[in-house]
Length: 165
Image 1 (spheres, rainbow, N blue to C red):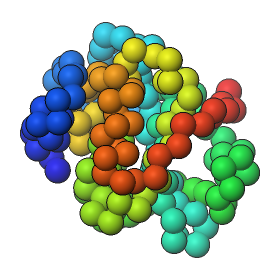
Image 2 (image 1 turned 30 degrees about the horizontal axis):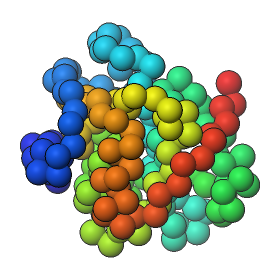
Image 3 (image 1 turned 180 degrees about the vertical axis):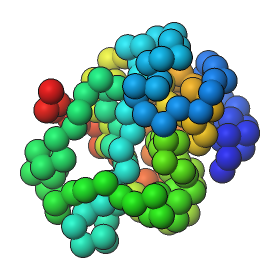
Image 4 (image 1 turned 45 degrees about the horizontal axis):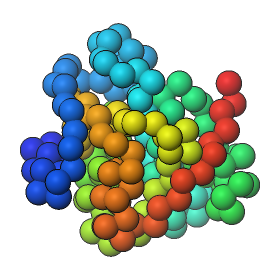
């Protein structure tokens, strides 16, 4: 799904969100420069794969954290992890680098990619993510995001993600 299809999907499912259109951003440093509202809600999204290139995972963490993939793999009983390639990202989620978002799971036709959400967002009123396009940011209730993904039947886990800062 592209941005418009994603927003339509959210509307059709009664998911409330706030949206701001902006220039394309490819990383958190660029995101900070455009001074969007609700910086405490900023999320960083990582698409990773195991060392055998068999299993893929989508991780969403607080925007100012740097996740330790080694520690994540140990705490979540996965094989060793590294970042997936741009080709894998396009093939599995239909996304380009810089556009990674939990809503990319709308494009996971096999509903096999597990989603891991940083527990930081559990008690937050909103989370900021892209709507499958890095020229816009939407804010929605993290519980609504989890409902969308659970309704897709992708595995979902809310876990404490340690930062290596």
